[in-house]
Image (spheres, rainbow, N blue to C red):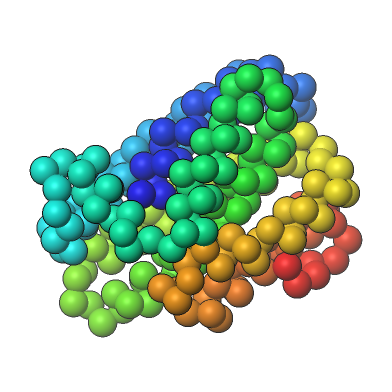
Length: 212
């Protein structure tokens, strides 16, 4: 569900990059967003195959399996990917919000926290080697997400976020991690939330990597 959502909502980010005033070439940044969208589409295909062939979710196609998955997803998770992300993408498309705000949600929270925690928990579960093909697929997804988050951090640096925006981002990191509920161990969720502060510190956007 999450990979489908991020693939569907990424185009306005590329359009916003073209219109933003950035240190880097705006057209290059926009092109990288389209490359990321290609990755997200591949990820969605992988997870749909897992849903169909491993989990046995009912449905004649990806859309029906996605609908079936909704019954197993915590409410906050649904809110993040089916309400906040589309709303932010719409605000970007309409020019009512900036690229920095969009990247804060998409790359820093959804990919940098929610995906990070989920992939870590899933890889831990797959460490017994029972499903080697699934594990290899998730490892490849995780590698892609690392560069997505790094690219998002680069965009965030160039948009020069205010201290209030950064404080809000740090505050929301724990909420994003909590969206998994009990499906992901607490220690894994907390570790992923803390990474937001460490990334901002490494990028010299905050003074100290305080606990998010």
